[in-house]
Figure 1 (cartoon, helix red, strand yellow):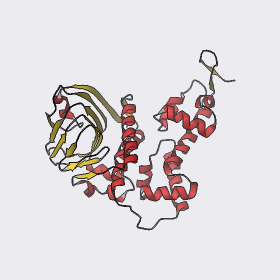
Figure 2 (cartoon, rainbow, N blue to C red):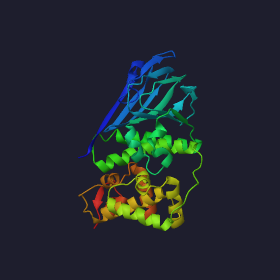
Figure 3 (cartoon, rainbow, N blue to C red):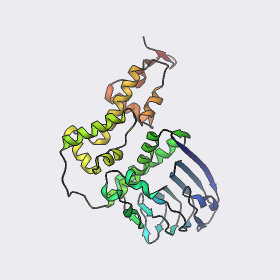
Figure 4 (cartoon, rainbow, N blue to C red):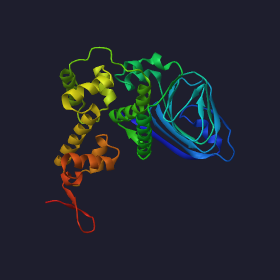
Amino acid sequence: MGQFLLVDSKKLDGFEGLHQAVHGSHVDVMQLGRGRLRGTLSHIGIGEFSLSIGTFNVGMRTQRVSSDDKLIIGMLLAAEDRVAHWSFDMQLNDVLVIPPLLDHDGVFHGASAYAAMRFDLAEVESLFGGEARLCDPETWRSRGHFRADIESGAIASRRLVRIMSHLRTRAGSLTPSTADFWKRSIVECMAANVMSSLPPDDIGWLPSARRMIRRVEDYLDEAGTRPVHVSEICAAMSVSRRTLHRAFQEVFGLGPVSFLRHKRLCAVHSILRESAPGSTTVSAVAMQQGFYELGRFSQYYFAMFGERPSQTLGIMTSPVGGADIVRA
């Protein structure tokens, strides 16, 4: 049985709307800046896992009492002035860890935007697959602040917003594998900024790259056509993301993300070639394989195969009027 995808989005008209700033967790809010608070608040929930993104236009103080047994990991997406959580001064895309059952105190001195994911501590080991320093639940039992890398932090922030935007249009049920994929995609955005703040992990034995690749490909064969996230592979192989990347670079000359994208593109190509026109759509097949940005997917597809996905499916665009006709 799949998991239900909960989607909730609303406009804020007053600071009271931010009492549920993080889905499933009550926060006491006091407005600091002058003027009526305006903004937006969006939540998506996948089982007990949730992602919340909020924006607001005036300064405020937030306090959370220690009644919630879930782990909260947040990221600062935008700020026009100083933002402090506990004694941590936050910079853009920094990550904040709020452990279960711990009081929290934050001050936003001006308009800001944030993202926060909330889930059970027991899920840490599976969701942060392969990164030994992140898989241990004890790592997350203390409050923490992780400074984001400027470049990778901005990329992670944009990706997180795009994922939220995509999932907001797809309310309904998810298959177990799709639900797992989206949770891992969200977690990865946060994990990227956490990892950039940790010292390099260059100690240890690097298993044979080719042997590791064979194990990965066996795992992907067993997964069939469902999309597989890199962190899932790391967890299954019990290796770090960095080790996996080095192995793929040695064998293929590209990283595991690019490899998985190429593999998924090939899967889409095969499905489209074997499908009769009218029996499916390009967007349906692309999304089944984890491509949620269809414009970017089309670019990847054309660059790889030299044709549009609609041409592979047997549909081509008429030069007059733009209508789709079936290719003979």
